[in-house]
Amino acid sequence: MTRQATASCILRAPAKPARSACAWIVRAGRSAGRPVDALMDFGLRRMPEGATVRETPRLETAWVLLGGRARISLGGAEVAVSRDSLFDAGPFVLHAAAGEPFAVTAGRGGCEWAIVTTPNPRQRGARLYRPEDVAAEDRGAGLAQGACRRLVRTVFDHSTRPDSNLVIGEVVNFPGRWSTYPPHHHAQPEIYHYRFTLPQGYGHAEVGEDVYKVRNGDTCVIPGGLDHSQVSAPGYGMYYLWIIRHLPRRPYRGFTFTPAHQWLLDPQQQGWSPAGLSA
Image (tube, rainbow, N blue to C red; front, side, top):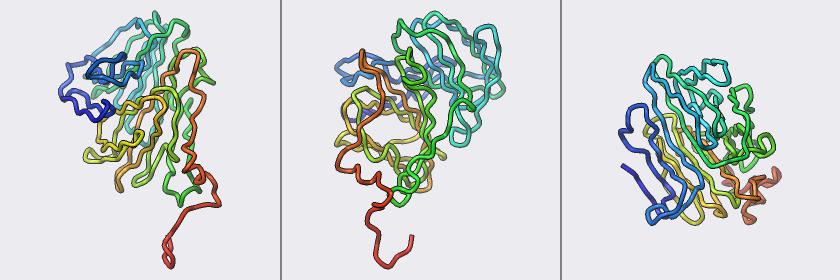
């Protein structure tokens, strides 16, 4: 089943995806039922223990390990990868160009991957990014009474992978706090995929003037040019994978804050707090 909101911004994967096949949630292109074109395909692949996928992609391809254990064969080498927590462990990301073969074999207990593909005739050189390659940036500390502190892991962007058409990263949103804050926008389309520390966890996503309730496993397509921001419900840590697609001759190099809220970036302006009450 697919849950859709205005302008197809919020999507949910099929409840029972085909065994070991990729369940595509976002497809590139524009149609009557898909008015937002993300310029990329995005889906989830759950692999049972022992299953192997051998692929020579036709498009630029990234596999992000969401959980479990696997072995990756790439460029004549085999590497064991594992991830027990999206919140406490950094990512393994397999990034391959069109025509670069690789294989993934699920380990004990199986594994789950987020997969993104997009056309790119320029990219060369497959790579496996490991947790030690990805710094966790502590953002928002000391601002807005701590209400927007979060961890940001940028796997690669235009500065580190200029031949890619993608930017890939993760955010660990602390319970009851905001991220992507102050709100910002950029010309390029973006995809968010959400997970929570408990299955009943939830949060809210702002996309332009619309606000959507997001739940475990939801995916949000953000059209270029719209302000966006996120908040998680108290008690629930919120993770989201974020993927930006560069535009032709206009790569993503950063974002623009919403001017009305930019004052919150000044540590000397913490905002209103109730008189007579301590934090």
